[in-house]
Image (cartoon, rainbow, N blue to C red):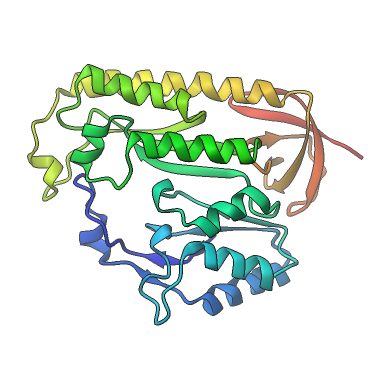
Length: 282
């Protein structure tokens, strides 16, 4: 994991991070390249770019750049890096170059964790998010069409202030429309000092009910996703405790034997406890 930036220039109404970490600050491309090259020289085969708001990377540099410029720079200058992965991201701020790289570059892994938060436009506006429901659906549809192996997961806040049942239904429906396969569900919790803490709150019982419903939907979507993998051959990066990850960030468990750090092909036999069960192909 390489932290390419810290802080955030935005002020979502539920978030305390900008007050704690300040505005966005970026590492330079050369600083990032040197860190990755050092890791690759030590045998690392996958690097994940992380940050508080990584689509803001580069805006504060002497010569401002976009995240797509950085990804292109890494892939060009470190050709022996097999896998590059992007962590949580705001889809509406993905620049055209990065979008093109996701469609065409096999070394850029086909998984994105979306900072979605809601599927209702009024709630997104009250959250002071930068995307609309339509933005998210359009982005996911176009990227999935261009690269069918793309896999999406997302953050969702359950029970944001003023969220009524119809608004919640919009969040439920966007999961299907964006083809999101699993969720990180966060029951709304007011952070002192944030604008959302001063908005009309909904009852804790309703927040908990909606969080339970979203987690149930997530569980079912993940099972459907894993079912589709059974019988396929997947390229798996081996990690500790006989576990690893496919290119689209599906977790795999397998018999002991493969060396940690290897990327090997596995036949997917089944799935259990939200994890694929694979058999290395000799």
